[in-house]
Image 1 (cartoon, rainbow, N blue to C red):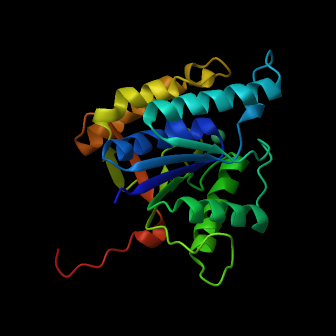
Image 2: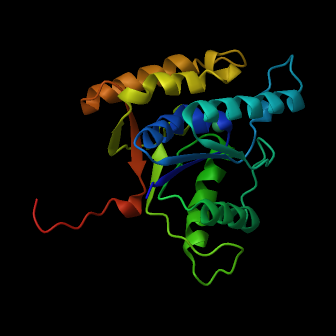
Length: 231
Ligand SMILES: [Zn+2]
């Protein structure tokens, strides 16, 4: 049976730029890929575009990008820059996990200076717990996520220590096209050169791991213990 990889991000750009290559690679291998963004990233609007209009553009870019990769894209619609961290949202996100039943979840690392990213990290931690909790009676039946990874993101770099390097050579070009659906990718809405940063990062991570292009992931600390009977 095909396995499912779910990328959960605070903003659509984070989902596709930092987790999209892993989603694309998973689909390439015959699995399913689902992007979930807590917000539409609407407050990243440049001065000349109203926030609401920019939100629509972000939604359209997300659908285009997902279609290109053969993935699904769900935007939960929490307000950008104001992602709430509370039980209600964690439970709602747990429901999304129970509904889609992903084998692997990729999300933000906690070492971020962006509060939405920090809250997303904490919400996913709790959502994975709630999804699994058999005594938590919700609409969908309990579900255990097999593996949790954190993505390599320029805004979440504090103490990010990758341990898993994924070969994305075959999907690199397609992933670049998916990123290009967003105006911010080419610096049209801000100062940061996303395209240069993430394409170069894939080269650098590839150099370290012996692949042409790679993305680096960090396993959840609780999943770093491997029991072996010999080395
Ligand atoms: Zn973000």
